[in-house]
Image 1 (cartoon, helix red, strand yellow):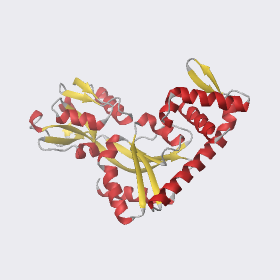
Image 2 (image 1 turned 30 degrees about the vertical axis):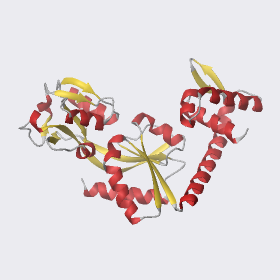
Image 3 (image 1 turned 90 degrees about the vertical axis):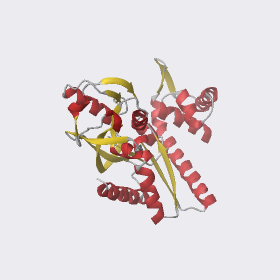
Image 4 (image 1 turned 90 degrees about the horizontal axis):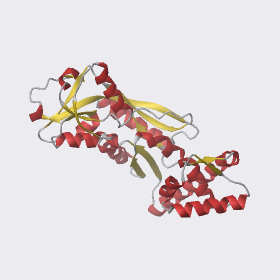
Length: 295
């Protein structure tokens, strides 16, 4: 097998399908299929079996994956080193985060950190909660900043801080809103749901159901910032994390903490076998300090 064979095998193994591997590698599906077949021909045995429309790794594939993963990591490190040499930079900090945390919290924290460490370069990507584990497994990022860490036996996490969910709405829609706003005040209100956004959105929907609060569901979004933008446009009110609400503030917009409070934690998730570098640990400590100050 050559490096291209290994790259394709690794991509199909980690993503679970030819189509997802093609998107990851920015090539066509036929190209992935052809390279995979050629790799199997060179090896003399199949790497995947198609079961119910999915590619399932064979026992031989499982046996080869650890070595393929190590080779891919070495190639990535070499590319990073070459890129840093080309740009005259020392080290790259590769982070991924949820769109909500990528709007205000992470960019401001990174700006402050880079002011102290001018030789560091940054890669920051936004991802959905359901994609975090795959991103880490594929070594496409070093650390994910998130609310609830994904459940994965290969991952570890550390707590960075906390915040609160808040109601976000136009002042004209609720001019006499109390602060904090009782959950009961949402009864009958036009609400943009974030129940499908991830654990925090689902927990908030469960809390409304537990209190038997029925709202008028006018829309839904899988991301907090889109829900807040919909509220700003006058479609209704929504409940989002504090950092999204702060980033989306504009004249005529209001936000209120809730009663009872709806707290959430912020974590850093990473591969247990590949803990954060000293650079990443330094940044996480800096982020932890900022979260403590801005509680």
